[in-house]
Length: 351
Image (cartoon, rainbow, N blue to C red; front, side, top):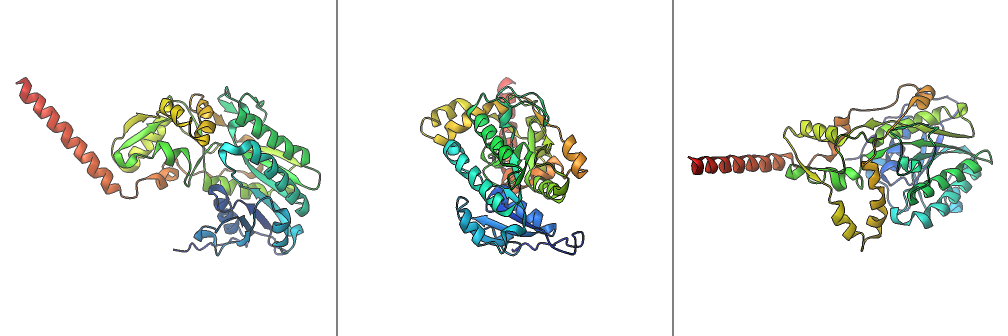
């Protein structure tokens, strides 16, 4: 069913409706950014190489183009100078960041300079290296002791250098995404919920930074609305939801109404898989994120936009519940019956 977007245009200046260009609009965060800006009353231009999700069709103006084709994107804008904000939601192949991030970064900078726009970029915690401290603020030093840290630091440094040269930029750093497909949740942690199983990635008590995508998208809108207060280059941290494996398990158990059997992520097996998988070879070095407690401080962002958008952990996790919860109950009931039968058999043998 097509989603209807209710636009809040009453809070905007009557002189003009602001325009945002979302790059990578068909992706997880890009589609949420489109919805959030459209709902807030912005005119949204959505760039993607493939068809957009159905929920976006009536909410945006579709620009079908490759992200590296700056001229092709500009030609499809009614007026490049009307674009106030560019959301950089492009998500290149995780295993090919070394070759893809630099040209994408340069293309986004060129596009922003053509428009005279501010680029809003979702950052991550990779920049702090493999021994990141528990509390991460905007002043926490970067440590380039992993390949992904070096790549992200270089990207952010390039945006910082280009800021003030016909464009401006802001990094909004957040934790692991909650929402959509291709996340740690649907690929590992919650993958076997239909079997009443919960997969833990590391020590279960360690706090971990998460960002529910609809909330993060709303934070982007709020930052865009305060563009006139920002310096040429700004960095903000969006704290999102801080939750350990134990807290995720408890939330899922409450949502499902049944206990979950804990299983450990088979990291040793994944090392074998990595021999044949470039993606897994890129993922494995990031295991440290599950072995180091970390959270993001949102004080600077709160000073700019006020209260931060944030739903409860349970609400954020709902989309990862099995599509047919009755099967979960059936499996759990069977396990319970089997356990009772084994206990009864043991009791009879012991008597």
